[in-house]
Amino acid sequence: MASTQVKIPTIDFCKSELKPNTLQWESTKFQVFEALQEFGCCEAIYDKVPNEIRECMFDTLKEVFDFPLSKLIEYREKPFHIYDGQIPLYGSVSSVDLVLLNSVETFSNTFWSNGNPNFSNVIKSYFEQIMELNDMMKNMVLESLWLKNYIDEFLNSNVFMSRITNYKVIKGENENKSALPSHTDSSYLTIIKQNQNGLQVLYKNGEWIELNHTSPNSYIVLSADVFMAWTNDRLISAQHRVVTKGDKDRLSI
Image (tube, rainbow, N blue to C red; front, side):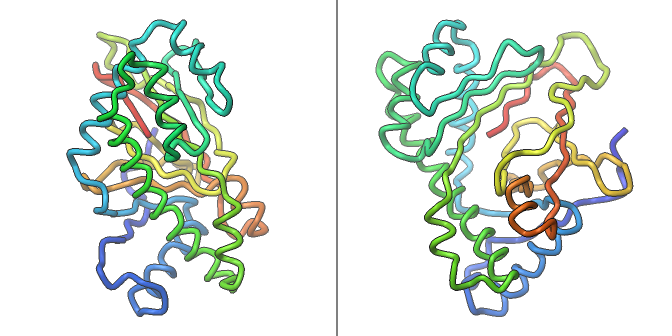
């Protein structure tokens, strides 16, 4: 059962004065580090991605998982592109640095004969903005650890992995189904946008907390294994799972 009592912190990244060496930055930095220490996650409110970009992206990505298996395998055979499928209720496509132009084109040309240039522009725009949030939060973590002089070196060494995941529901069943078992991610941070709720995180008291978007501009941020190791366990790697219910498949990015 998921807890309805414990709530993860919600942190506002929309303030215009949110820049290094300001009071807003210091306040937000404290909230970020505290949330990742206590929960291993937080909800980030971030308004840089227009709603029409998100809607177009989700609408188009639904098509990807309707393509024949041969198309998905063709995608997997390309360097740095991954397809995980044939798992009940779960399938995903991933790419290293999808924000790079050639990587976006490889993705689009695999699935659409015309390359779907509109989608390429949409997904590139989305990930460019999410990378800004990603870098901002990593910047705040390093500042909290008194490693400000190493921030540029650290960020330049990071690789950005993009994953699009489809969780299928079983039509006619009203009970919750475990679409993806409990696990942690093997990265620094995971930033998630979901079109249907279902993501849950394990709190230290043994309860599962539902991670729901409270705003169209909401993103769920999870701290992962590398950050936990890199900070000598000061940050928690969030143990999380996906539970589906209803009659609509869940997509997450």
